[in-house]
Length: 127
Length: 127
Image (tube, rainbow over all chains, first blue to last red; front, side):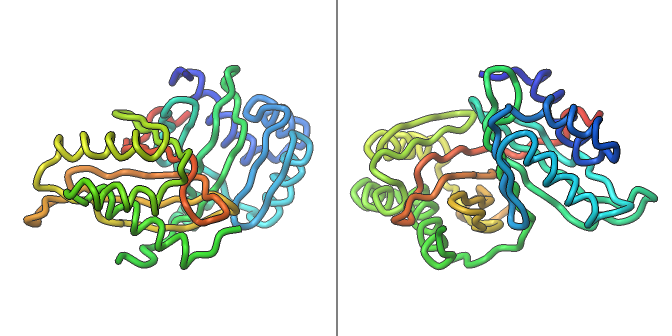
């Protein structure tokens, strides 16, 4: 089981990593948020291990200059899994430009193991 | 990789199982939605394997008579993972009484492997 305080700290480190523009600081935040052998996958990118995930985040930051990720819901845990929602917003303020639903496994040390990111989409095919 | 048509079918079978009041039909729907060795876990219940998951759903149905689960968002896949949102609503119509965010691994045959269900909660601690 994970405890909420530590997972909240981990998710804050995770979002801070996505928002950190200084490479050395970003890599340190990645190490606080992700297990050394963590994996990340979303519809646009993927990475395995701290260095690859750090490089992936750095590349993503180039695609969204002037924006930042903010926690919109959660984190909440179920056993060793966590869920949270983020919003991508203009740093200068303004409307949300993207909404993500992230799910991850949580390691005993409170860091993230396997992270999967989904972008919010409308109902596909309600039977 | 999974393909959307088959995963949409699987999620429809999954919600149909939660809504099916006839035990034999519910068990058949569980077999269509869950792999034989599937696991399910949410804040209120857990089960491992088709029979246990079927019994778990049957017990849950006793707790929510007169209600049904409807797809509210998704399903959407990222690699071999799927995400979808359900609403619990009165069968007679009326306001949503619960919102769930389900996340699962998808097996090559399109059935669900490890399912984790989260209930929607507000932001915990935005740093």
